[in-house]
Image (cartoon, rainbow, N blue to C red; front, side, top):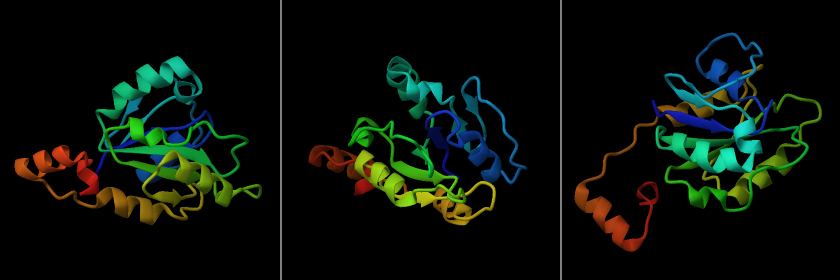
Length: 165
């Protein structure tokens, strides 16, 4: 399974999503430090909310993952991710919209934010009801085809990222 690096603002649902992906009961827990689990890297929301931590701390942890998940709850009051932010990453970037079961959910608006940030795929999910979790798990379980050295060098010469071949 691909290791998913989760980043998003405080209370967006990163830890709850981790619990749901692992099949554990969803219990609120404030993340105080970076947690390396078997399938996710869960970060405190303050890392994304603070420009200095985001640049230094988060960038460092992306190297330990297979895919980066930009996480926004469906009832976010504002967007933290600038347009094209995924271009700064050296891993595939997906968007995850959490809390889609909230009565004040604005899924189309949050989807637009994540599309503008450059997310390749977007997964609307609810850690509480389980809606959308199967699609996200299927994506994380997809085996990545191994590239030969020649294919990697050819992609580099063309300026392509290996996952876009």
